[in-house]
Length: 299
Ligand code: ADP
Ligand code: MG
Image (cartoon, rainbow, N blue to C red):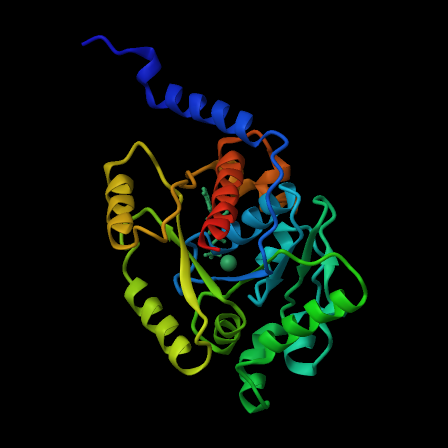
């Protein structure tokens, strides 16, 4: 059987990358009406939470928006990927959550991307999970800190932050609860692999609990399919199943499995700066554009 060379998966990918590059070149994103606050959540580890948080953040910033990544995972992977100093003496989200330090005193600019900020995590945060238990308003501390930061920036006449993306640890402790109370929207990355949907109903139940008791505004607004391998039947099946369950929330753009995405953090970079024209970078930029445009549609 003759194979049309224009119809091979590689050709299709090259074609799509080409179209994306053209569409994204010099693209300026429309700022949302209000600051959008997302928590990137999934209690499974290794599903692409941190990669999605930092790469979406960098892609939004590249589109001209002002973006803050809040790292509340004691591992500090998001801080590392953004090239932010987070050794144990650095002021971090630990000081904010446990010692009431204002967030404006811990936020650092990302060295490689204009308009991208990061509130880093240090290893001290691993103790916060326990220390928070005895503090007043223990579930609301991040929410209050972010509100204070936005107010402080406003008073100082600084440019408004358009997006806040909170990167969570892979568990449902008080740090993640704080993140879910602080956000209005939840972005769930789903890995297109075996067992991808396992644990999802638990996550949705937890979001529902937070909504009922602590944060009535919370909604799962966005689901993102990550580590998609177009060559496997399984990835397509998982994607199809997710889209069936969450037709309104699932982004059209899927993030491919890409070596570039996994390499970038070891250089203290996002894939957006590490290899801007790679398939992975283009996918995150297209996903960021879609995420931003959906907000405009939803009002
Ligand atoms: P989480 O924050 O949910 O634990 P990470 O974003 O740290 O997940 O990703 C887990 C691992 O998978 C990391 O080593 C990361 O570099 C890698 N990874 C994430 N997304 C991709 C992708 N699209 N393609 C290839 N590797 C990826
Ligand atoms: Mg992570």
